[in-house]
Length: 337
Image (tube, rainbow, N blue to C red):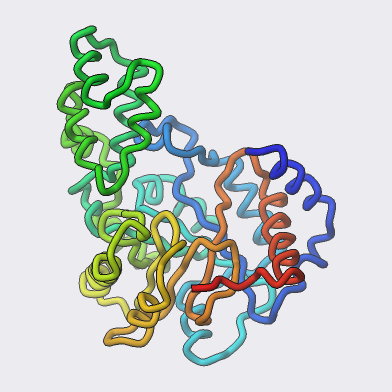
């Protein structure tokens, strides 16, 4: 994290939370996570850091002492009726439907009495496919932990048009549109993603998602296979969104329709939102990643990243609330589409 961000979070911690919480009526605290684990996770290790169970439990205790948990269904009901949510409400959300949801996260949430919503990629459920970025992390991990012959490495360098010093950087530059390269590299290095899916089972199964619903948690779509939406056409964006939401609604007979963007909603047009919010089978709520900024529709809510292990929960919460205060004063609290 940059020195500027460190200084910002340090300054935010000095401010009284009560002052920072004085936001517009009905405002929500919307922290998101992907993973909680004390163990190494090779398919994520080279992508982003995450919190362990001790830090996550501290986060839950902090939020419960200072905010009021609400459910996704309560938020949707508020949007439908116009009824204001309790002051200081928060909803925890988790993306990608990782196995740690079942093994680590929901047991902790149930013990604390904290509701949450889980946003799922339809292509990954039941471990049928592996997210291309997870493939990249596994490739990097394999290169760093496994011996390869000079001939194999030379073939890899030629394929990526790089050398040893630039190979990791070249792998990280693979995008959704060029994701087929991950399978080509795996072939060169002798990595089997199919075996990894079968052995590790990094994602939830449909049965496990059904259990989440029985336990009182909520779910929503998160696209089919986790693309960057600004790299898709409008038709592709709509297809990814509708398919992921429709799959869950039909599979589990959900009485609501919710969606959270993978990666970011930056660059997504107003037409996209109007089509989904006002068209046939409208989506009830869409979550972006704009750090609590306001959008043109109250049905578009923006979350903030709360899983950085080097940012304590009080710094993350006070930091986002301070940022929102600054944006409001400087008239930069609205997303323009």
